Picture 1 (cartoon, rainbow, N blue to C red):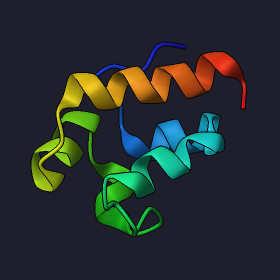
Picture 2 (cartoon, one colour; picture 1 turned 90 degrees about the vertical axis):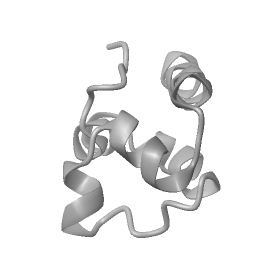
Picture 3 (cartoon, helix red, strand yellow; picture 1 turned 60 degrees about the vertical axis):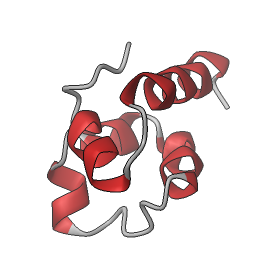
Length: 67
């Protein structure tokens, strides 16, 4: 599965929990709260001032590596 800017954070964490450290690294420390579980990658990046393309690259790299 390829993660896009429209993918919901909660869905990513459900299918690839190993990506949690990537989200934690951008300051998204409340991964279990309702707001973060319902946000898209693009929305999370906007809130946390992160480049969406850079985050997508990191998340997809972690998923591809199967770590």
